[in-house]
Length: 340
Image (cartoon, rainbow, N blue to C red; front, side):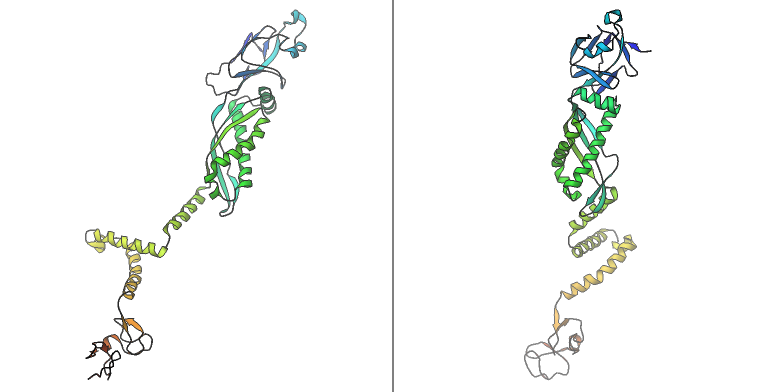
């Protein structure tokens, strides 16, 4: 049974409802002379059989065939045109709805110039308002069948996600270029959405992008890449780490051996120490070969170039200049003095 309505009104205490249908289910009965109360930031749309009959602004309205001429055909001539007629009223809020959250329900495929094909997720907030209540009711309530704010919000989120995917693919080559252009991206996305929203009697007031992120595994690889770039020269970095490890081990009671620094660390240090020692030795004083002049290490017994005796074999000093002269030599290779 339809509900009889002498006073038709709706008070939104939450302030969060875009549209509210009275009655919520079915239709109600009203008659000419019934009162319609519309509050500030509201507009009331008479709605019947999927079509809006008329729109009322803020104030108290008495329903007559003067302000509802289309009802003349719906109201019977009996009872002087005051017989009940079935009606539904949609109260539409014209305030700006802020802090509406949006996000991509599924990852967006994106062909990245550096990372190849990746999937992106994004989220943010937006604000909107209804600019054409009659169009909004006809499109959303009449065509889409949306009667709650949640239904309208979900529909708008799907539009935002779709347009974001198109805009990213058309204007950006790499995810590395996007992070510093959130404001420009949001402005371009807002312009793209304006045409879509206006088809439903809505306006995009603001839209903000909080983040655009790749999957966790791609993020981990990006962090590794940044870390390698921060290290710079790997050879110098390894030397630095080895020196720190040796210093930390020396601070421990009993040294590295006494505290058991760990087999892994010990093996790593053992493999690095020969190279480090050889470099240190190579940087020390050198000994010239008496025969060909090639520089050799102080501990060398024979020249690495000609095979001649050097080092420990050259134990006889020159009586004039004091330079080492190989045993058995008759003259000094440096000053020419006679030996023996």
